[in-house]
Image (cartoon, rainbow, N blue to C red):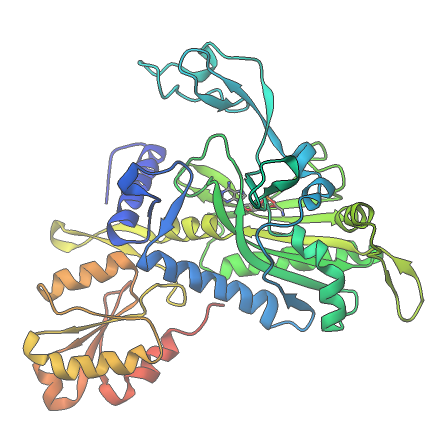
Length: 449
Ligand code: GAP
């Protein structure tokens, strides 16, 4: 849709439209909405869960299944509390924050240039009556068992990788892997973010897909380059173009003290360039610390040289929610059509689209053969059946959901055994024999890249 607004303003306006589409169409909406919501928590509805599952399945396929040097893991969310002492989270995982003495709100000390949500006339937070900054630990705590003493305290994991390190020896021995090899997991992580914002971008509960790749010190750089390339290829295969994707190497003063190098993969969101993935050289920090804290040997022996060493770790850590949000932002378009009309369309890659095909009988009288087609397609994909409203409106509903193909069964179909297949982006239509429909769609729904 054309607009005279400056590009940045229009992008933010589109973000608001997208947030509203996500709620209306059941992609993503606030958790516990009937109680007024809970800040930083989101629920994925029927379309959102399919999108997220497709993205996770693709990551798993690329990172785990297609390789013989990566093993999968699904660890518990709560680990022994010593895990988080060893990892440094108990001591260091904090953001500096300030409290406002008048409205009692809490803000991140590095984000004071924003408008105060309580003040009239757009006053900056920095102009409020603020306390001195103090550190606020971001880990979410819980209690185990009935007692209320310190021994019952535990944490919801702040990143999915720590159990990979504590399970390293067990997984290596069980899978009989030799260095170099990796362990991957997808799962929930929790951070008590002071200021959750930008829709799902900064949440308190989110999903990470992480790979920890263990190698010899002499091969650190080689594997860092390898995984950076692999991960960029993945993001490009999702459909992100160069105008929306870039890398940013961390400056030396940004690096964690144990890290040798780190590169962020950034996406251009409507609210600016932001990190969606980090590729980090974590050195031997994690295994060494867990070895010390647990009193367990985590070094390995090179079977040929007999050298004993603690492996170095190259990590790739992508946020599933942030990537879903990037996919939705990238796919969202309000397109001008001839005759002054417009249509809202989500141009998601077919392999990621929540619904692969919609079956639309032209009339309710054609339900029986149309339902038979739906049943056949459902054996392979997530399919939607819709016989209500005029066909143009039904196409629009599917465009908004990102459905790549609409299959229309009309009165001619009964005569010629063919259906009309309409493609979402071009709106081109093909007449396809019902008997060939599954293979026609399969060819076009091939996995990405
Ligand atoms: N194990 C390394 C690690 O956790 P990180 O940069 O803190 O590194 C990795 O997080 C990824 O997890 C980020 O690139 C981002 O995609 C996602 N992520 C981190 N915090 C998040 C939050 N509060 N909400 C949503 N996603 C988040």
